[in-house]
Image (cartoon, rainbow, N blue to C red; front, top):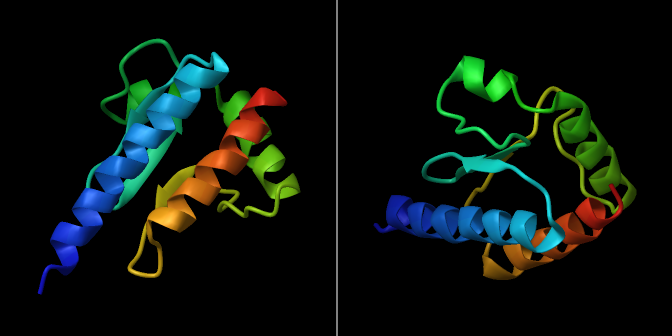
Length: 107
């Protein structure tokens, strides 16, 4: 009981953190996703479907992925979708956001 509600709440807080991190590091981007899913699309235009998502700066997404890898965070190299599970908690999300902030500052 409460599993999906917990994942939804954690996901929303995580996406808010992603938006804050983009803003704080001066990177234009959209944060998309629902429930326990989040994704950054480097674009100043709304991302709402496949075409608008793929129009984002994919080179920058790859650079972010590699910068995170240098900070001991592995993201599936086929994309930058971020999936939360019951193994994740607020502390894990905060740690990721700190490493993301460092990675984005280095881009």
